[in-house]
Image 1 (cartoon, helix red, strand yellow):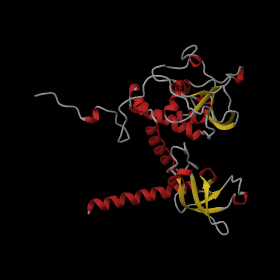
Image 2 (image 1 turned 30 degrees about the horizontal axis):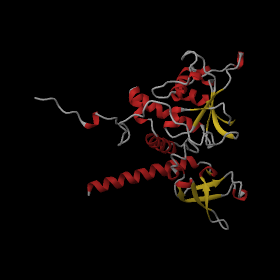
Image 3 (image 1 turned 120 degrees about the horizontal axis):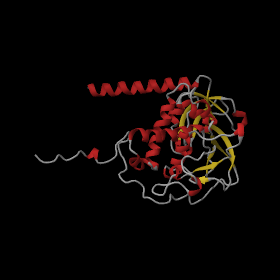
Image 4 (image 1 turned 135 degrees about the vertical axis):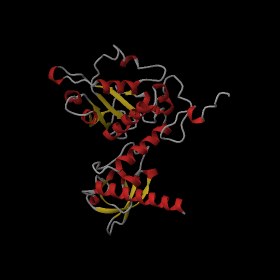
Length: 305
């Protein structure tokens, strides 16, 4: 009896996606965006990754500590920020900047888990950490980190959570050498869509949104027929606070079609200018779950026939 030929599925990475990439990216420097830091000199929306969660390790669980460590913040974008190699491989023009550790009671350093994750993101495959980030090894305290995007697009705490959970998924399901199979734009886009859709089913998440340029998910965030409210419109401030009904989407332009009462009618609003009414998150979740149940029953009837 000869050797059995291994199944094809054992010869390539398999995960939550049907199509996986066989070849990891080649070792070497990760190309930075050709346009450089587009928003240089501008004030941009990002997050601050700190170490406040380290003070409450015995009191809070890991998810609560991570949430405490990340806060939305605005930064003046200058040349002291560094591109993040791992994020560039995923199609995200992310920038990090180390802040001051502080002294005495004001001293703040990242928790060990957070520090090692920041180092992971700053590591170039085959080359390791930049010398400026690896001066005294992993035991060196790492101060809080300023995080933003080079293109000036907002980077939020939800973006950070989505990115962290992507790598947590890889850590839980694959050995380190296999991670590179999934560290690319196509696989991260699939993950981001899954993550945002999952958040949309949670009644406690008011406005789910992560990497809208990669995963718009407008049909899940704003189901057809839902009542929503306009907010933050500078060109038409008279619409702010008015209630309308979602009727269509333009995902390519990240816009939601909202039908308002006369004389305004149907208007195309940027997704970030559309918010739910009070209780809207629960309504959104219920609508999505009912739609999922209908589709499940429909598939069941199709099989029985």
